[in-house]
Image 1 (cartoon, rainbow, N blue to C red):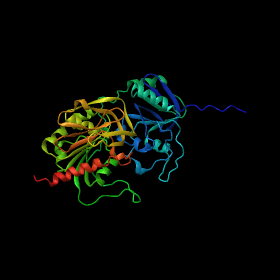
Image 2 (cartoon, helix red, strand yellow):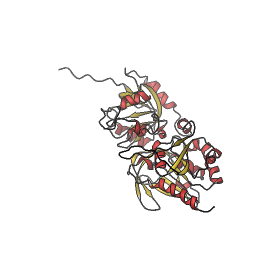
Image 3 (cartoon, one colour):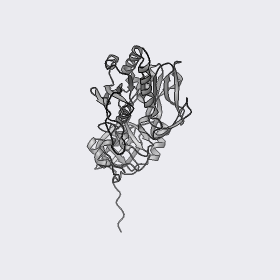
Image 4 (cartoon, rainbow, N blue to C red):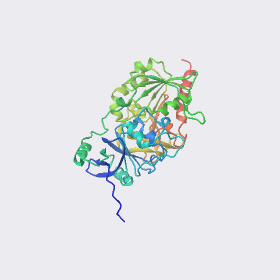
Length: 389
């Protein structure tokens, strides 16, 4: 009997410290450079790959069964994948799910994103936790030809996410209206109609499901680009302003976003609600600081405590920066904290309907532990409308 032939690796992951991981490539061919993070979610790989917050990052999935439910157009959080690539333990299997319309590999190939399978993701995750999110180069070549020295040098040359404004790369090109609501059985996605609270949503990399949650909560949503000015925001005469999630360094995005938020709050008392990057930028506008985390929070199992009620919510998170709670000014209070590491997960002003959270209430890992935040936003707008001028 002949000995089994060893497969030639068709992909490799090169870390800036010179560590090399070989595996089997899938999706697009070529090479890409990014920061490497890990995500602990057991489901939702399509939503993760299309979440604009992952711009500039390659995602290591700690759950091994990636690709088993295929992909479908309804689960895209934006038009195309934004994460630079994906790392998995096992090669994606054939999809088995009634909602699947395409396998993961061809979907990634068509969208220009690289995947690598067959890696020891446990070892990789432990390294990320111990040393911080590394800079890496990921390459896929069906012939297995790699210039390792060049890949390591490319990884070392990556500038990293600190000081990087990526919101401008993922934001919408022009304003648009949004009326699609959350998915519900058996109709699926439906459209809202009738009057609603006029909300201007600033798109720093907004996920579609956040906009759906706003619409389902009774909001008439107009989305504006990340660089919108206060004058452009207030020209819509909004009842409230929403600050979306997004990628990159909040301080870099804040160069243009912070003045807009300050100007809006100086000129009006309308409610303001932020999520993720929107939370961080709002904190900056209120006088706090943000800092880069060692490896960030990425997953769908993060327990967060509401300090005011004592309630614990199971949340979805995706962030590499955090608000420094020690820098919050006197008029701003911390409302939520991570039970993993005590980092800040929410703030609000003491005397105005201005609040935000670090996590993603629209992702529903609890599954609906945090939906009340959208209802809190609409309640604040309703209360303001009923208050005599």
